[in-house]
Image (cartoon, rainbow, N blue to C red):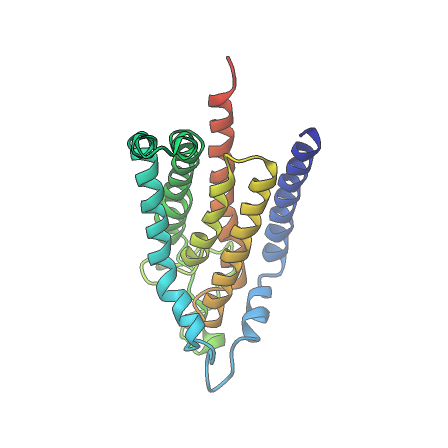
Length: 240
C-alpha cells in the first residue's frame, strides 16, 4: 500500500511538472499551436477532416453522453440509500452496501468535480473571459482574426471561445470516477480520462475548433479542481 501511495505521489508530481513545462513552452513559443494546427489544415480546402463521421459523432455526442453520466451520478448520490433499500429487499446485500457507501461517495465526488471543473472553471470562467479566437477564425487558417497565444487576452469573449476546450474537458472529467478508489483504480481512471479527453480534443482540433494548448490546459482545468476535491474528501474521512 505504501508503494502504491508513493507511485500516486510521483504521478501527481509528474503532472505538475508537465504543467510547468507546457506553460513555459507555450509562453516562450506560442507559435507551437500554429505549427501543430498547420498539419491539420490544407490551404484552399480548409480543415478537410472536419466532416469525418467519427469526428462529427464525437462533436455531437460528447456533451450528451457527459450530461447523461453526470445525471446518473447525481441520481446515485442523492438516491443511494433508497436504491440500497431496494437492493436489500431483492436480497442483493453486497450491492446494497456498495450503493450506500463507496458508489455513492464516488458519485458525489464526481458530481462536485463536474460542477467545478467542466462547469465553473471551463464554461463560466475561461470561456467567458479569455476571448481567444478558434483556429477557423484566425488569418493563418482562413479566418479574419489575428492569432492569439495561449496567455494573450482576446478582445471578444462572446464569439472567440477557443480557450479551453469544453468537449475535451468532458472526457478528462472521467478521471473523477476514480478519486475515491484505491491507488490502482485511481490510476486507471486517470488514464481513461486522459485518453478520452485527448481523443475528443484531437477531434476538435481536426475540426479547427481548438488549438493544442486548448486541449492541454483543458486537462488541468479539470484535474486541479479534482485534486482539490479529492484532498478535501480524504481530509473529511480522516479519523479525528
